[in-house]
Length: 154
Image (cartoon, rainbow, N blue to C red; front, side, top):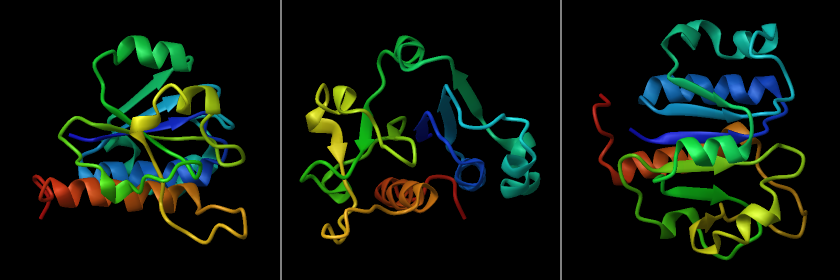
């Protein structure tokens, strides 16, 4: 099973869409607080439709809490600040893929501690913009699933 980690997500619609993808791919979703919304938020539930009862979800009080509870995790950090493409990685069952908040990304203090595990999605850089969080999560998740030959997915 793969793992998607959202570090301090801000927009409920993105988290709901990612939750839906997680349910449909048997991927665990990890949320690191503070969240920019309530998990009971009607917009969050609307974007995840009726998938919430099937979601494998873990919520952490902080990044330190997440690290403490997942000490042996291999984590890939999605960012626009590195040269390594997400396709340069060989993903394994049990890997974690972390995404930062929509407005600022994963803090550089975290990224600089793990440069060999930082990956990006290639895109036009002159605009200094990035893809929607839910789209980015799906792109990298499905590459990892493809490499694993879509385990248990029909």
